[in-house]
Amino acid sequence: MFNESHEKPEVNIGLVSATPLLTPEQFEAMTSGSEAIILIAYATGTTPERLNSAIKTKVDSGIPVFLLSSNSADDHGILKTTYDVQAKSAQAGAIA
Image (tube, rainbow, N blue to C red; front, side, top):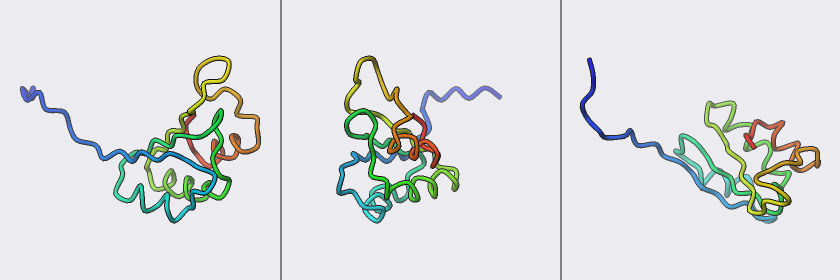
């Protein structure tokens, strides 16, 4: 039956700004209970390598992690996932 309600379902989205000092424990605390995560990377998509296992844990548990860049470089978004720090986030399951 058609649902006439115009209410949108609420989704708990965690928003985390990555910094060079962000720890996996801080990332977990900031995203606890989130159904999706937006991780704002620094530079053109860099995140601390120590976060990769925490990203993988979230993704493996069915929580999508979206990786956004705070610097669009020559175009828009994360383009160079060949850099080691960016490639490993993507390999951990982050969606660029």
